[in-house]
Length: 102
Image 1: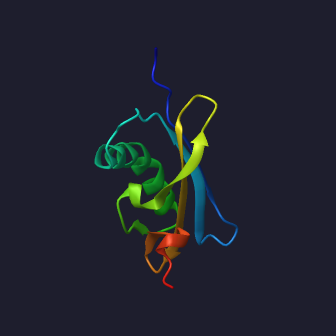
Image 2: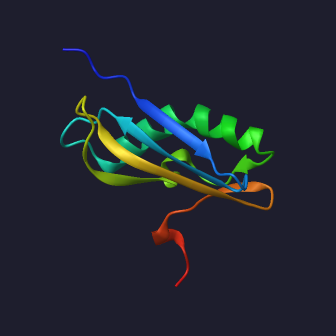
């Protein structure tokens, strides 16, 4: 059996200040959070850095910090993650509701 190839879809919002998308990644059951974070970093680093560069900013955190798990799996059985970021000054920062100050 072959491992499904990761799927990454990222879109810059019309204001040029928001980045949203989804990542689908093959993660084996029982994979530790540390290993899962490293997998996300490896897969998402290039595309996220490319978008940051296109926006004229740099990443403020490791790629895994820009993701949050989504319920369910995609059609190929990959675990789904939302990807959200916003531009703050000269940096692209994670932008998930749990990151916002209360």
